Length: 67
Image (cartoon, rainbow, N blue to C red; front, top):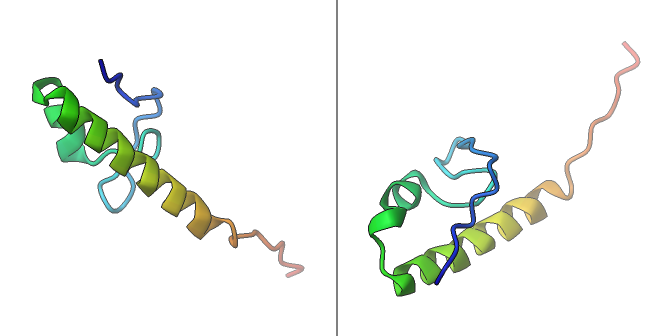
C-alpha cells in the first residue's frame, strides 16, 4: 500500500504544487481514486519536484541592506 506523501504543510506555490508534499492540485484531488501503481508514480514525481525546488533555492540568500 502506498502511503500519502502529505506532511500536513498544505500550501500551493505559484505553479500549483504543494510545498509540503510536492504533489499538484490534481494529484492531491485524485489521490483516493488512484491505483497503487498511480500513487507510486505520483510519489516519485512529487519527490523529484521537491528535490528540484530545493536545489533551485540553494543559491538563494538574504542580504541585509545598510540603507
